[in-house]
Image (tube, rainbow, N blue to C red; front, side, top):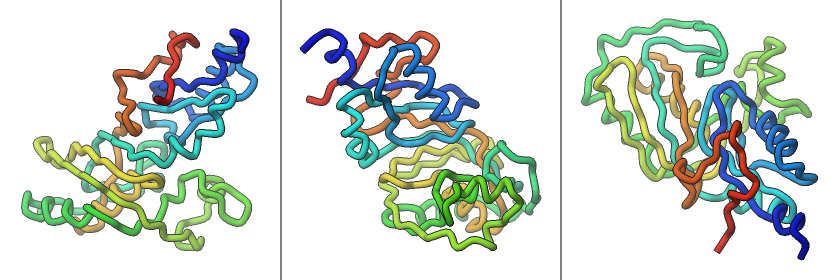
Length: 229
């Protein structure tokens, strides 16, 4: 096996910068590593940061494997306001009461997200419907109520919250493939008889790979690859 092939049949753990799309990272790493075949395992929203696994060469065949692994996120949600995108990509569109929310209610709501749950993906997401990405429908002015977005079943293995800085709630969530954290944030607000948006999101772990193994895009080194044992 020559040196070029050996370097290319690997995968990399990258820390996605804020305001970069997952495709932006693919394009940058492709150019920096001069890779011919590359793909990522699991989209992150533009405003999110954290682990993005990049598969190169024959490792692109393992993308489904990486996508199937449990994922861990940390972030912050804020009660009392909503946005169409459920994060800060769009402007506020609603304001709701929060005076009735106490620690007991927050704990009751947290418990409802543990285990197998059903959720509706956000309209600002990359899922395809009628041949178009949902976010394309959203940006064309179509509301979620006008679309038949399929409910999906996911599993939340662990969810911890900290309301020290209420109405901001810090959270850590460990979940299965296909879980939309923004949907959890939206539904958390609804279950609190209020509204909520997500102000911060970091994917801290995919399977056994944590942020301690992640490279920054600006200093990417193709020699610092990972392998499956």
